[in-house]
Amino acid sequence: MSHTSGQLHIWKGRELERKGDELLPAGTEDYIHIGIQQRNGRKTLTTVQGIADDYDKKKLVKAFKKFACNGTVIEHPEYGEAIKLQDDQRKNICQLLVELGLAKDNQLKVHGF
Image (spheres, helix red, strand yellow):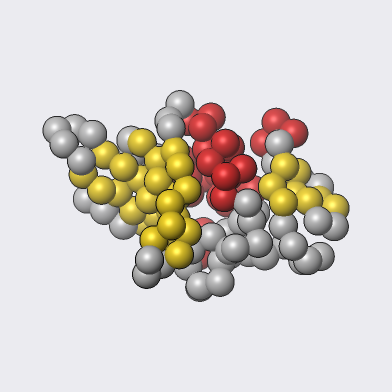
């Protein structure tokens, strides 16, 4: 994976914008938290929190859509910006974040049943 100052090239030529010259391994926190919430019946939501503010979360959601799910960026009053995705995408999100170099395996915390 190649990157230039100001841009990180990812999956199928799409780009994530970032600030600075260094690739940031995780967010402003030590961990990226990936959790699941039960909706009604068998429907669930996957929540991703702790990704650095340097990355454009809307472009990340577009990259996550390759998992055939819809998603959005929400503003949480206590935790800041978070990404919500339809269905249980915890394993897929973990793999993609490691593949893109946004986090290492030991920086991902997976929560849920």
